[in-house]
Amino acid sequence: MTPFDTQRREICRIGRSLFERGLVHASAGNISVRLPDAQGFLITPTDAVLGFLEPDQLAHAPADSNAQDATPTGPRASKTLELHRAIYAAESLAQCVIHTHSTHLVALTLAGVWRTDAILPPLTPYFVMKVGRVPLVPYHRPGDPALAPAVTALIESARAVGAPIRAVMLERLGPNVWHESPAAAMAALEELEETARLWLLSGRQAAPLSSAQTDELRSAFGVRW
Image (cartoon, rainbow, N blue to C red; front, side, top):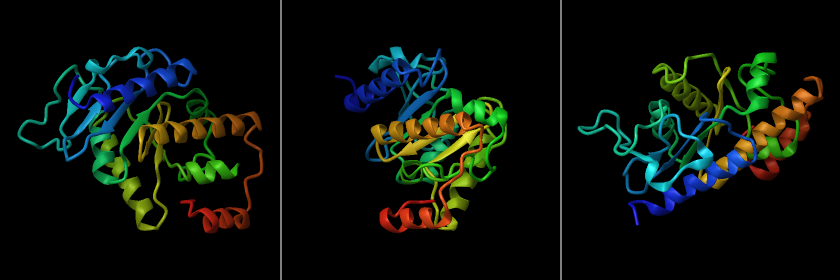
């Protein structure tokens, strides 16, 4: 048994599920899971194929990049390590972060998003309930250190207006989604990708839910939109 064996197996399970259903491809994407008792997080290694992960292939990263020994142990961590650190620091409820290069979401940024503060309109009740508003992060190269503070600022500004977010969309790269468990993060990612597919299939012309309809969802289910 390796340290944090349950979390290691869960990352591998999520990666395999995403890969087998075509939600990730090649070595694109990464997954991390926060560990209990401020022990940092596990994260997939750089250039890993998520469908073929093994539990002992994951890197263990301290939560604090300024800690005396902040270097991850194990295989070389994903180049987006600092972005994962920033999300966990900014959102205490985040227990898992998933990044993919999801086809329809990346295509949406090429065709043009709905708005920069919300890449997709509130098309379906489950998109509003399970995902919520997703802002666009302007293009940065993969692993750019400027990504972490940019995403932190979006998380903090959304919280300040009482509408916390659980995902951002990196222009031309793909979504970063976080949630209270790996399974919930994967479900939110799937809902986000499916809504992008619906929006593109409609020619970006489908009418969104009305203000009254989104208000009803907010009142009935406490959604974040």
